[in-house]
Length: 326
Image 1: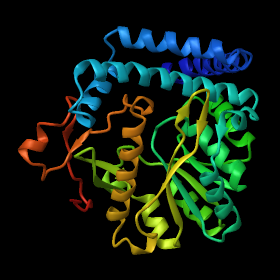
Image 2: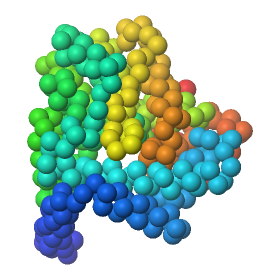
Image 3: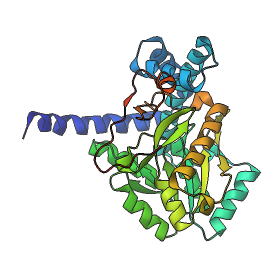
């Protein structure tokens, strides 16, 4: 066995034990203490010159060029707070899954949507950005509709993965691994199961991505929901779980047209990106600005547009077999 293998044999169980202890310690904390921890963590992350801070400020400059530096810094710090709260809320829910329902609320409009989904015969895709609590929203959607599966990344540490996956499945929500996710999503559609999908990530064209406009600049985004929604005539909803006060609410927007009326996967994916942008503008402090969202610069980008890309961006290199999207 290599030294790396020996090290992981020791470190993986240790990390799993620490994670398990965190779950049980956090599960016993009052909400007020958890909020104080999140506030302390956000200030610590903001006060030091971290890469996350630099990326967040660069992203906010792209999304909100009209803001002054002071406002961007304020939203940056608040976004760190929401990241910590989101993680802590999820860890608390692992110990007591019923807390998911305590933290999520539905208004009358959203209740009607879920009743229609639950009683209808069409598969529904709840397509989400990384805003508010996307973890709790997936669990809550499953409880309200009765059958939801979500695509989730697998953790390299098998002990942590077992704890996380178990928590996600405690409320009855199915989990589809991101490895070979397309096959699992197709199977879910054929079985009439609804899907919760996070797609505001960099997906290369060769891996099922497409370039769309996001805050005025092209970014890559997965076309999987659009492809399958058009194929299976599924209902598709742009959703989010923003925090309001001491709880989270289900925020959603219907697309301007029916799924079958979109002429291409790119057109439908662009419509979803526009809805994401709308809800992010409404809750900018709750979006995950630490992600390298504007990572790829398309080859046909104009010089003026190229200057707007952040420091971490690089030219997108099309590989053999990729079809160029514009």
